[in-house]
Length: 125
Image 1 (tube, one colour):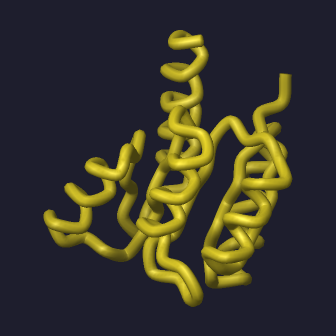
Image 2 (image 1 turned 180 degrees about the vertical axis):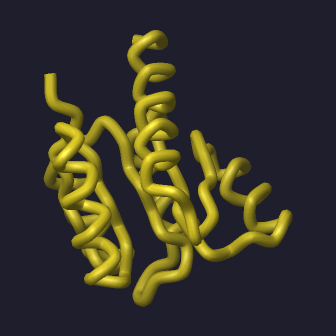
Image 3 (image 1 turned 60 degrees about the horizontal axis):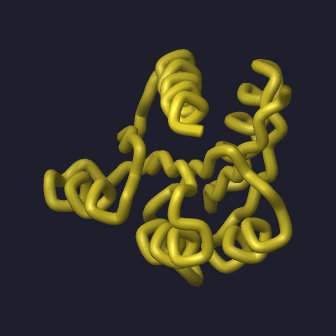
């Protein structure tokens, strides 16, 4: 069964590359380029996993995560961000993140982290 991922990344080029990479690995990916568009996409679709950038226009990833969790508390979230301060990482996990990956990152590592989060979720169902 194909897994659906909501990717919210404000850098269109980076988002397109990441979406293509995930699609090459058999994921169905919806890309939104700001927090507001990400929330609208979340409300309209059904996703197995969300990957959120933290620093975005209109709505940052932390705020988006709070709103998504308020709608569906068991949503799996990975933050993918340049924010590397310990306080930011801890804030991400406090908001219910399943993983927190800092940029730059290895795309293969991201793929295996995505698989690990989805595997944990399937064991809990």
